[in-house]
Amino acid sequence: MKYWIITYGCQANISDSERIEKSLSLKGKPACSRKQADLVVINSCSVRQSAVSRVYGQIQLIRKESKAKVIVTGCLLEEDRKKIDCFVTIEDLLKKPFLIEPLRKNSFSALIPIMTGCNNFCTYCAVPYTKGREKSRKTSEIMKEVKQVSSQGFKEIWLLGQNVNSYQPSFSDLIKKVSLVPGNFWVRFTSSHPKDFSKETIKLMKNSEKITPYLNLPIQSGSNETLKRMNRPYTVEEYKKCAFWARKEVPDLFLSTDIIVGFPGETKKQFQETVKVFKEVKFDMAYISRYSPRPGTKAYSFPDNVSFHEKRRREEFLNQILEKMNLKRNKKLVKKRMKILVDKEKNNFVWGKTKEYLTVKVKSKPEIVGEFIEVEITGYSPWGLEGKIV
Image (cartoon, rainbow, N blue to C red):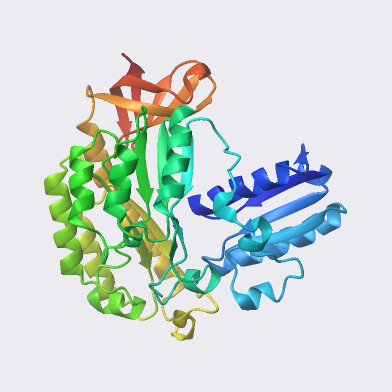
């Protein structure tokens, strides 16, 4: 049997696909292309309706171009599953998904899920309905996997969960244990929820050589009224207090966030409140998305009363602010020496990430992909840096 895997969505889905591939590799081998496969597995994501439509389109395309069997798995609402005659849950596909050793896509960065599901029920999100309530992996299972990848020479470990901060029994205890495992690697984690973020985690980030000063802490909106409609149980003031304290404790902290513009009922005044917070916190990166109605969520019943053009204008406005802030920050890094983990190459150049998750481009041969190197920053743009090996 020859198989082909198509993955949509976040790092958690990529991690699931690695485990799916390991399971399939016991019975077959990867095809050279989708058209040559006997089995195509689509690991889906349903964060937006457009993503679900893409899955429908893929099924039709595959069945038109080949006789391959198609299986759809991953994150889909029940009503969407009913429209697909080939849906199989991740649990049924793998039986015991966390006990299957993944077939990792590279030899230096390991994706390790520590939990699945979500208990927060944000009004715009389908995850609690598609992946169920929060379920934490046993610490012993996670540590076994961490020790394994460390012994294999992996340079980066990502701990994944919809809300890693609510890991049970304790997220801060877990990352402390991970950071104490022998080996030359960095520890990263995503995603975090402001309501559960702890000072213990920041203190570990401050005092550990392995835990990187990179934090994705989604605010979603700078308006308390909008946050309430989103069912985000914190205020803007509480968020800023947390962000400012974290920056004080870890001065080189790289703080990224997620923001939805044009959420139902978001007025121009409320958007300006988001702009104000954006400037005050000075985010290093922001993943800005335009709201789109998602069937099956509570917000789907809200009037989608912000026009497409206004949503796009608000998105572009925030991106322009971000671009100016990034340009100012990156300019200050010229001549600074930084350590990067090289993760890709093309045409005698390599790219890598600093501990803070900044991207650096360096002229070099491809052999150093997957290695740590020291560079001196020689150039900058809003979205990246240039450097030379020292």
